[in-house]
Structures are given as C-alpha cells and as structure tokens.
Image (cartoon, rainbow, N blue to C red; front, side, top):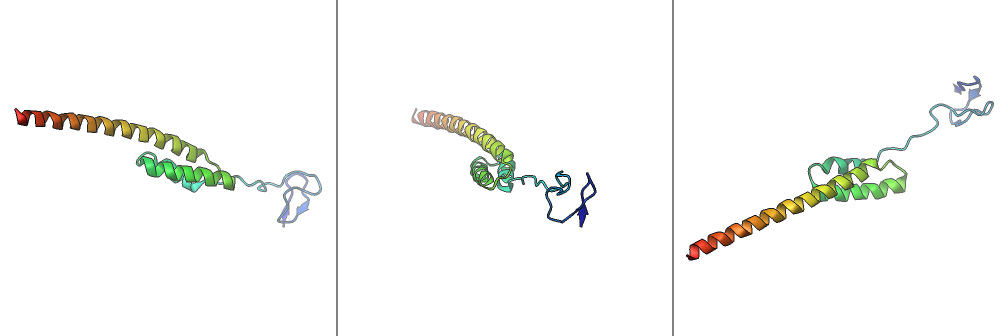
Length: 111
C-alpha cells in the first residue's frame, strides 16, 4: 500500500492520481524509452555508413510506431548520410587518380 505525498491518503498500488486531493501520484508518469535500434545506428554511423543508415532508418520507423524517443535515430541518419557522401567523394577521387595514373603508365609503356 502507498500513500499520497500531498494529503497522506491511502492509495491502491495502481493509482495514478489521489482520489482524495487529485494530485498525481509520484512515479505514475512513464517516460518514453530510448529506441535501441536508433542508438545502435547512431553509434555505427561513426564507422559504417550504409549499415548505420539502414539501422537508423528502421529505428526511426519503429520508434515512431512504438512512441519511443527517436533523437539518436535521426542523428544516426544525418551522420551516416554525411559519411556516405564523403565516402563517395573520396572513392571517386581515388578512382579518378588511379585511372589517370594507369593511363599515364600505359602511355609511357607504348613510347
């Protein structure tokens, strides 16, 4: 059995508000849980772009459906999208420099 902190009335264990004074019972408001898949996607966004993007996207969809916090899922989407753009830029410049290097060697071999 628990008691109201405001008026001292005896409360049943399932009570959300005090029937005598109407004050909310402490601990009755449940806080939204953190979306675990979104958190994993956020952490992986520092290491792997595509995997983190997919996990964060799934975490965002599931978190909204279940009423969970989705802040980490959104952050994971943004960070993984940025890392994917940087990876594309780096790979394209690397492939471009290798292609020009190979072409240069092939030209020298013909001479």
